Length: 107
Image 1 (cartoon, rainbow, N blue to C red):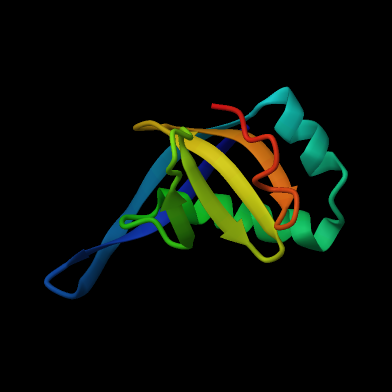
Image 2 (image 1 turned 90 degrees about the horizontal axis):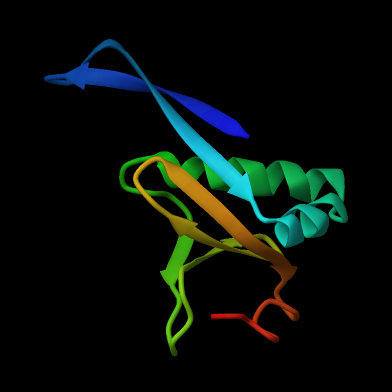
């Protein structure tokens, strides 16, 4: 799934145009199955929060995972989205409710 964001470009406080930034968002098979089970309102919120990751600086409640776990965690309402981010790609690896998010987290 390729997302694009239209970002306003400013020079000295004056809007001068737009940047269009392309971000490739990939869901693992596991994350895709988990995403498909979520209700429509939560899906919309999750996609919106994933798009906010592209902004500079990224917006949202984002934390790097610790204790030997790889990647990052994004909080989206009652859900936690686990992902890895490279320059132009976000790889979503897991989507879970708060209570289930950290059980059996793979390295």
